[in-house]
Amino acid sequence: MKSVLQKISADEAAAYIQHGDCVACSSFTSAGGVKVIPESLAKRAQKLHEAGHPFQIKLMTGASSSDRLDGVLSRANAIAYRLPYQSNADLRKAINSGETQYTDQHLSHYPQWINYHILGDIDFAIVEVADYTVDGELTLTMSVGATPTFCRHAKHIILEHNMRHSPELLGLHDIYELENPPHRQTIPLLKPEDRIGTARIKVDPKKILGVVETNEFDNIAEFKEVNAVCEKIGQHVADFFLQEMSVGHIPQSFLPVQSGVGNIANAVLGTMGAEKRIPPFKVYTEVAQDAVIKLMQAGRITFTSSCALTVTEQWMSHVYDNLKEFKNRLVLRPEEITNHPEVIRRLGLLAMNTALEVDCFGHVNSTHVFGTSIVNGIGGSGDFARNGYISIFTLQSTAKGGAISSIVPFCSHIDHTEHDTQIIVTEQGVADLRGKSPEQRAQCIIDNCAHPDYRPILKSYLKRTHHKHISHDLSCAFAMYNAFTETGDMRNCKF
Image (cartoon, rainbow, N blue to C red):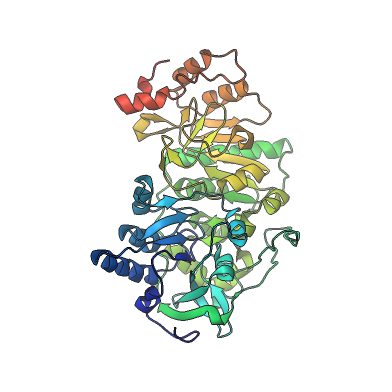
């Protein structure tokens, strides 16, 4: 093996990795992800497969990753097992076909399971860095994720030194790791802006096999323009918060906000943040997207604590042009801290996450289409939904041009139970489920969140067993799905 911190090529780095190895890569969304070593590894896998040799790895990241990691390796049939979250179309296809095994996991639990060795050994950690020292101090780029945990447990470390990112990022990160019980201490984080750890990850330099040099940004996909539906959802969220402030449920100074990932989440946060009747606020979340940077620039967000900075190149350039200012108003932390129940509960977060579907009684499906096919994963939504002071799930009331209702009698897959669900928001309105019985929840969701085309169908379902505590008729609880499968439109369902 080459000496510590020696420059090596991506092909040389890939050659270290063998069939069956566990490889943990820095990445949380596409931010901070390794780029060139996975591509070399995919080429190596293809050559070995053509020669009749097996080659697949167990792949771990902080959460999802870019096409340059999940995509290239999946297309090369090089991933045997993947966890804890993904969002790549090719990998999704492999998972849903059974070619790749996949574990979908709460992100707050994930580093702890690694620390307890529940998930086995990590052979290699491949880490993107903005800078490093010969004694093993690493400055990360635009995400932290589970990288500190990976580095702690990996037998070997390979660095991708991305020179597109400046060493001046030093000070942006706050690396704080937990000890295992019974030695674990209280996390001393009282406000989103508190810094409680170190600026860099410290590793044993003897574990570093070499450094591969790169020079490129993360190429985050552009977000869709905010459409009328997302704008309505965002305004409903803002109006709900204003109502909560008026009755004293939320202080006039407001509370920190958490927002989920994707186009809807980005649009809802942007619309809500533009509501000037809501005072400037802080963000404590796992992913900061374009809307966060825009609102920080506008003075609407005063501070942001996140696990990743997942912004398009335009806004990344803005961050770099104003790096000194952003380092005073932005911090990136490990997912073990951003998603930790203790901190979420202490800060009193206003949590906003997206859902695929919601049923009449408040159960939420965030992950599986028709109960069988994974989309992305649960990510951190469960961490924030269960522990946030107020938890909101947003979604459009219909999909496929109205042929699918996002409000159904019984979810085909349940990620968040009725006990963890407080507020549902669609473009139709807001359903506040707090303190309501199952029957009251059902009426509230149907009247306020279901599309008008589906309200009679859903109410007809409830009438079948209205004398029960929960009005389910298990003989036809999934009839709306069957109607879509048979006719292509849930509106053809008859109860």
